[in-house]
Length: 354
Image 1: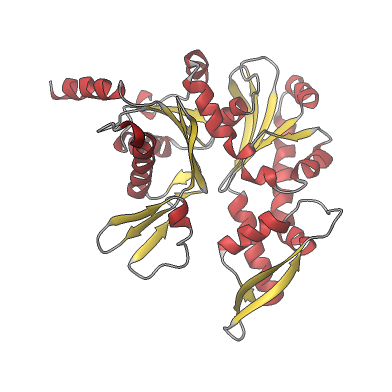
Image 2: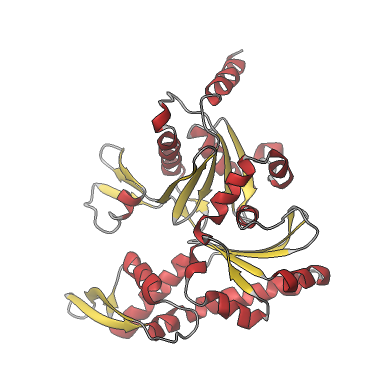
């Protein structure tokens, strides 16, 4: 009787809630509302007061606090390499975003149906954690889809066709390379090497070459400002500030795109090598489709200068960057919110089904 009451209550509250799609990323969380499109695009960061256990800020407000907080405040990124590392903080972050979506509607206790993307190599334990944390945050129903599939749908791939598509989603924590045909992933490879690793490579390079320590956010800014996968026609330089490891004092240096390209080259080569491995294990008929249709890049690193040309040179296959690559996954969940037939064909079985 007690369980039946909660089922009825959830359904009732669900009538006043908006179904949403979530791209729960290592770096950013994006939320798609069934009636307004993309309504949230914020860093996956929560700032919390350790003394009072109170949330001080979420998203962009919390991101700017990283590395600048006093001892009683922690700015936490609750997802690492695409999976939940801090269950409680992730739950509070998702609840904050669900409430924010419904803030204008004065819904007392929103109970939306949530479509959420998961990595290809997720374990059953990690899958259950995503479901449980989303339900605890207020979802009445959680539907899981593979992030690569959602990205392909968001990039307007005909995922249900017999023709193969190759999508490469390079996010903050992971890179996923997937061959998709007939509504499923045929061959794939997932790597814990993506935007964060490129930032770490820049930090390490500047430390070794200049004896200067810079922060992750500065490294990311350098990557965005002058980073590239291949040589540029017009050289780029910028100034960067950090702490001199010899004197301990602040110091400013000027760095070039050539140096940053050298810093990132090993990581980019690993990504390219894994793309070749996926192509090698893909059935010949599907490889033929991929040569015809080309490769599509999604995720934040797709915006790195010349990354498409670098992959095209290595694979001899045309490469294009998906429209607004940062939002492909969440736009894919949005398309599925409005197409239940497609959703049922591509959804992943719940951890509770096994």
